[in-house]
Image 1 (spheres, rainbow, N blue to C red):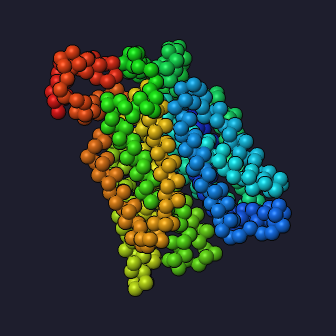
Image 2: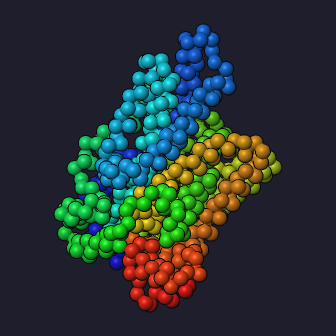
Image 3: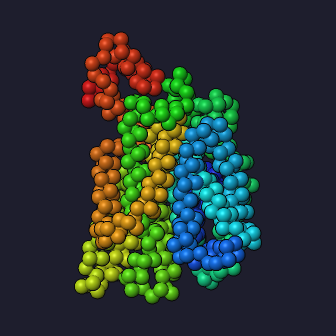
Amino acid sequence: MAQTLVKSHLTSSLLAVAFLSSFGSSMLYGYNLAVVNSPANYIKAFYNRTFVSRNGGGASEETLTLMYSLTVSVFAIGGLLGSLMVGMLVTKFGRKGTLVNSTVLVFVAGTLMGFSRTCGSPEMVIIGRFITGIHSGISLSVVPMYLGEIAPKNLRGFLGLMPSIFICIGVFIAQILGLHEMLGKEEHWPLFLSLAVVPTFIQLMLLPWFPESPRYLLIEKHNTHATITALRWYRAKCNIQSEVEEMQEEQRSLSTVDTVTVRGLLTDTSVRWQVLSVVVVNIGMQLSGIDAIWFYTNTIFENAGIPIPQIQYTTVGTGAIEVIAGLVGCFTIERVGRRPLMIGGFSFMGVCCAGITLSLILQAHVSFMRYVSVACVVGIIAGFCIGPAGVPFLMTAELFKQSHRPAAYTVGGSLNWMSNFTVGFVFPFLQMSAGAFCYLVFCGVCITVASYVFFIIPETKNKTFMEISQMFAPRNAALKSQPLGSLDQLKLKAMNGYGTLESGGDNSMEAM
């Protein structure tokens, strides 16, 4: 049955938009995460030569390390700024419009980084990284929002995980191009950093020809004709009547509700559990230890006894595993659902984090334990990519109605980037103080998030946005103050936080 649904709804237009938006935006996030690893020594050498030409003497090792750390971490600072802009941008320009307009950031950043060595300016590299971070912060939220709104409900999971696959592909491409045989030579690093403009240029040439999100056109722009035209483009010969009626029902429920601000979202008790769920899964995906593993994969492999010249190829192998795991999650999510991928992914990562701790403690006494640590690294990466890498962004789209969705992505995205920066900054100190036991902190985070998903978050597979909101309504209603006057109780029952009337049979649900 699921196969029939996929075949009847997965049109070439849907697939093309998913590919273009992910290829020109999400893939760049993965690419920019990994692109600075291979040319690190060349970039430091360039910084040192510039320092000599400006000051007459070389920079200290601490200064070079600080400048390189700033080059790496400024990407996350830009990402945080970009995520804070998402709500405003998607409301003003639309989902597709935001993706198209933000491409200018990539071209500016690529130009700065590409000509930085010619101009003898380390500042151009750092500013370029900051601007690419802004673009990634925007696209990391907007792409899943766009795909979640144009996809039919039975394909939201499949299309919603495509960005995470392209993130893994971006990391993999950066790892391959960073090999010494490719662009891993000193003379090529400016080209290596600026190569991100190529997929963005392809996106800019083709994506404007596709329609905007139908939900945005109807609910926020009130353009019924454009909505029907867009749906016919994305659905081909499928009957769109029921989908239009579902969107109109949501539009009527939001007729008295403007697009919610971040402050309004955080103070709205009618979506309190949805907000808490977004907070938990977005912080959890970064504090799960995946960033620490990505940052220190080479060190772990070196400790495992892998020859240093072979480590770059081993790292590329982990990139291939990321892509395979992402594909597994993408093609199974509509069959198994969101919850199993999240619970299974986080649980498996927790077990592997505990495994790394055990292997690091015992590898001095048991020789094969060093290979266990390598297997655990691969397991953490695979567990992350199969579910936690992409489902939180999909979940943010599914848990909220149109009025709350931009603010929800702003909250989720900013927490994601802040957690990313925190792990990168704190992990070296945590490793120094706790040693091998630092991975137990990540194990605890993973098990906690898996437990939260198991007990709190319902399965959203094949549910409309209205149905998902109604699934959370009883739990949110329990947060509201009980001793209300009769008039306040009547308003609560009539409005239910969204402006939709409840039937008398809902009393039993409220009591729950």
